[in-house]
Length: 390
Ligand SMILES: [Zn+2]
Image (cartoon, rainbow, N blue to C red):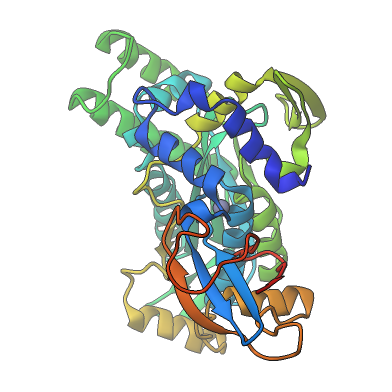
């Protein structure tokens, strides 16, 4: 079985357990889309020449979809490669005490605020200490190695900042103890306010929760700061670790009638272990990590934030003597096939170009669509094409 089919198969096998009104709508919608990705269920574009005809199935664009997620990551890396100036970066990993995990699990709306809370801790630290504005991208993640619900943040941060008053770039070292304190204070204060204003539901009584908050505030929280990395190395790292799906397809080892065997990192994150889970449990756990529809997967803060003044970012680039590169144009599916496989999918068997001739609506039944006869095979938007003659 091709690797990219395995997740679809698990979803199809367990459909009865999640395709109903009791499932969180964002989760149900995502799973259905992933199952239909690259099939006529989502519709298709039709290309034709005198002799050949090619169907290009629409893809689902869901973040849970392994193949669409992979492409989205590649696109994200290209875009950041163009956007980020060529300075050093670090990856900062903010965790929270495990006592808070169930609070976020029960209050998914609070997850929306996490990226900004983490960003504010680092931004304030850099402003207070050095009077500079950093470049910062904040990516929330909800799963730990064993697919447990473990919300944490990956912060991609410049190892230095822009001092606007002097128009200069200041390099500095992050102080781990101080950053931990800033993060601990920011998140504790946020949860305290959420609790006080009734924005937080919990099985615990309010007084009990306040005690937990107070106790956890006194503890050392775990944060991690990576070594300095060049922009290119850093983006490679970010693509592999920060944007990875909960279970990369390469980690699924075997699917039996009842169970899924997959590789995961053990609790300390040091060793790979093999797990054997019932399929229903595997899919239900995956569902917990499907983001809500309108939730941003990541946000930019600091100098290059969308709301930051254009003047500031222009001044930063001028000082660094670097050119601000234009955003890369998104490749069409045929261009990306040409780039990846060196073949032009829109050239027919006789070397003649095929042109776009129409679009098939989702769930079009083959043979009942008016117009030219449609072949029974085609390609999904971004795979190597197969072709059929008329
Ligand atoms: Zn997809």
